[in-house]
Image (cartoon, rainbow, N blue to C red):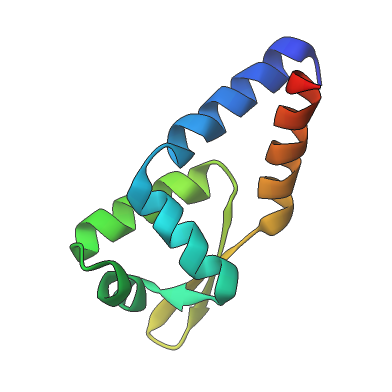
Length: 93
């Protein structure tokens, strides 16, 4: 990946991660997969707001979704986050 594309990718992920609710969602999903309703209960924000945050996290590749019965469960793709942190480390080292 060329330097400009890598920088754009880092900036895109950084912007999505800059929201405290999205960071709280990442912390929750780091422990286990969860459906929207469970995340709503933990964060005490509206279902539409949680869904919007999940979409933004999914759009940058940080989430995997799996339909289980009536619910969609989301889990964190840790390797994407670890790659992002590695790319940041390369910039500052």
